Each structure stands twice: as structure tokens, then as C-alpha cells.
Length: 396
Image (cartoon, rainbow, N blue to C red; front, side, top):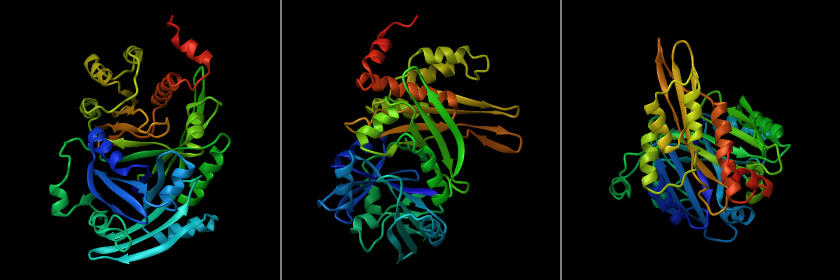
């Protein structure tokens, strides 16, 4: 199982498309109408984002926006056998929103179905045999179904007109979605973990309990054993947690952030900062503390490069080699403090016989990222006044 595409419901898809092009250097590859919804399609590497704006009051996008602020409404998964995936879901009592449909196309067969997921989130299962359109051809406009997807190649096949009209030729490219984070209400973590285990076949991996002086969260990372799907699920462990802030503003559970993977995060962030991408701040003391750690594998020059772009770093050391994990968060991309992006690089090292890639999530990074977002929460005034006063005091 792999991530096929992600749908955002927003008031103005064209405006958000411009934001992706200007700030994250995505390519706009198609636009059109599908099921009473105006859609802008953006692409980078194997990532496909569908930005959806309602054209009628009873469209799916309109219903989502009546319940929630703009955000992720659907995560679509590419599966090898859709019949088995749907049977597994329905056997667990999951609501089937769309039964399996099949469409014979010029170079392949497209199958799809949709289920109700956690809260208002939905999941689409997609099976692609051969080269198929991103969306079904019978129900979408010509521009949308001219985008062809080859699962064997993991890139977009565009017609010549679209390729020539691409509005962005930047070398920056995010290769894939590393993980997608779901926030659920306090007390629902175990139930959500069980749902994704039973319905999608994900398996529990790392577990974290993050706590600061002011707030905290619990998180369970879920991974599919045969694909790239990684879904950390968070619940608040305090009433003023940033997770609770999300749940309150979002009016329920939902996707908090998506991590986009690149091969050179330092260079990418340097260019994206010049493009005006708003990012969270990391205090200089973080890098001083890193350098003081006796096992720190980075030179002063390397740490200065990380500090200049305010990138967090964690590493895994083994006798055979060492791998590093680099991460940074954007500010929320909408007017309310809900959805944001994580930008990530998983470095590799060559050990005898194989290339070892950084895996999982470093607890040090998780803690530092939580604290960085907490500082933004304090700036918004969404932590108690006592916390604000304490945060403003000079450090001893």
C-alpha cells in the first residue's frame, strides 16, 4: 500500500495553487471540474495534491467546509488488489461511501472505491493496472484526466501542451510523502490505532509520550509492512496541548501535517526561504546543546549550516555506519492554526553490503519539534497567561 494522492478542501483552489507554486515549488499540472468541484492538481516527484473548491452547496467539498476549516479531506491509497482491501474494510464494519468502480482506459485499467475513515476524513482505495489517468475519465473534465500516472515509474506523464505550459522549472523537488499525521481527541488514540490496524493493515511502530513544562501529547506511529504508508496518530495529554488547539480550531479530528521528503534539505530550505516560505523558529541554544553532546557526529561547519536554516537533526549510530534525520516545520498554511507541512531528509550511509537509510523518528527531534510548535502556540496566546509570562522571562 502506498499513498496515491491527497485532497484538500479549500474556498479558493486557484489561490492555494499559487501558494504551492510560489512557496514550495510544486508544478501545476491540471485544472478542471469533477463532481461539482473545481480542482487544481499539483505535483512534485510522486506527490499529487488535489485542491478542491465547491461549486455547489451540496458538493462533498462544501459539506466538508461546513464542518471544518480548510484542510485535508481525503487520503487516497494505491493498493495491489482493491477487492481484498475493500473486503477487509467492510468486514470490520466500515461504511462504504463508494463501491468499487472500474474504468477501461487506453493503456490500463483504473479501479477505485471510497470508505469513511476517522472523523470526517475519508480514504479512497485505488488500483492502477498499466498507465491510467489520475482521476476517472468518465466523471472528470478533459484537463484532469489528461494527467496520466505510471505506478511503475512514480512520475507524472503529461501531454506536450501541459509540459510546455508548466509554470515552474525550479530544480527543487520533493520526492514523496514521508508520513501523514492524524490528530484525534483525548482518549481516542487506542481506538484509532486499532481502526488503522484492522482496516488498513497498518502495524504499530514507535510510540512517544512528549511532555514539556506546559503541555504534552501521546503518539503512536503506524506503518504498512508492504509500502510507504506511515501514519503517526497523536492525542493530547493536556487540555492546553497544541494537539488540543488543533482539535478545537478544526472542530474535530483531522490531518495535522504532511511530511514531504527531499534529498538535500539544507539547500531546499535556503531556496524556499528566499521564496518566502514561512517556517517555525528554532533557538540557537538547540545547536549549542547538540555540539556539546559527546556523540555528536557533525562538525562545527555542518552544525553552522543546519543552524543557518534552523533545521533539526537526529542521528542513529551503529558500529557499521551512521544515518541522520533532518526535519523542519512550516507555519500553518491557512489563516487558522491547523494544517502545516513538515520538510524532511532521511540521509543514508554505506555499510558493508547495503545502503542504510535513516528510519523512524528520533525522540530528540520529536521533543524539539513539539517545543517549537508550542512556542508558536504561546505567540498566538493559546496557552494560559501564566505560561506566556514564564516564557517571556530570561533564562538563567
